[in-house]
Structures are given as C-alpha cells and as structure tokens.
Length: 218
Image 1 (cartoon, one colour):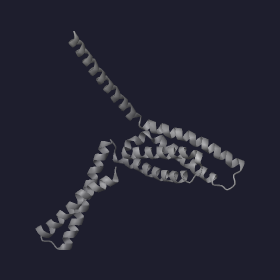
Image 2 (cartoon, one colour):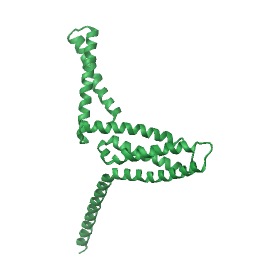
Image 3 (spheres, helix red, strand yellow):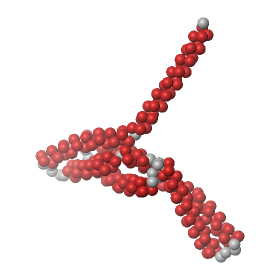
Image 4 (cartoon, rainbow, N blue to C red):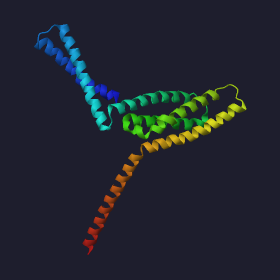
C-alpha cells in the first residue's frame, strides 16, 4: 500500500475532524480550552485509525489477500528492501568497467521486481523463487566479488575466483530476467489476448467495408 497516499488521505479526513470536534466542544458544549483540545486530539486519533482500517480493508479486498497473508508478504518485502540496499552498495563499489552494464541490469531487475510486488502484493507468490533464492545469491556473490576485487595484490587463486564469480553472476542475471518475465507473464497473456481480439475486430470491420463496396459496384 502506498504510504504517502495513505498519509494524504488520513490527513485530509483527520484534520477537518479535529477542527470540527474542537469547535463543537469549545463553542457548542462550552468546555474548557484544554478539555476541548483533548477531545479533539482523541477524536482525531480515532478518525485516523478508522480511516486507516477502511483503507487497509479495501486494499486487501482489491488484491484478494487476508491480513495474515499481507503481513507475511510485507515482512518479506521489507527484508528484501534491505538486501537490495546492500546489493546497490556492493554493485557500485566495484570498479570494473566491463561488468558495468551487467551490474546496472541486475539492480534494475531487482528493483523492478520489488516495485511490482510492493504495488501488487499478490504477485509475491509468483516471485517466491526471487525472494527466497535468487536475491540472496546475487547479494552474497556481489559482496564476495567486491571484496576480492579491491584486494591490492591478486593471486592466481583470487583471479580464478573472480572469474568464476563473474560467470555465476551472468547466470544469475539470466535467472533474474526469467523471474521478472514469469511475474508479468499473466499480463503478457492478457495483452496478447486483447491484441488478438482487436485484430479480429479490425478484420471484421475491413471485411464488412469490402463487402459493402462490392455490393455498391454490382
């Protein structure tokens, strides 16, 4: 759920409620200033909680999730965000021009998957391989590669390890691409279906026009 949007909606509802409760308390019921202020704050807090609960329920209903499922997904998303931050730090600490494009691709894909899942949390179930396997692997390997690459003197063993790590990261990048494709595969299927429908409609329209032209010429 978008926290900023949620904050805006809650503020839009809560602030007028606080002002209204305060005015009613101090003018309508002739209560003392501090007592009216206390009622206004308590009432505002209650309105904010109710608004938050309504928004959360609508969000869960829209994405067909239970509260337990959403808590589980959110926990994993928060952990993944920390891992992606580590990945970002490691990737851009590596001073290796030949692997720059690959590093940018890795970060772009991981951020895209996380963003898609955060916006539509039900996609998490199609991204479990990414969250429970591939993300951990790419973070660990990238940090290992960064550590080895900054060594002042590199032995044959270190160079071999760097080479093996680069190859493995290349394979992992392909796996990340497959993860992303799998996550959006339903969208692609739906898009292809819509395209087929549109093509069929256009064909029928063209056929109808040709048939009308043929009738006119007869």
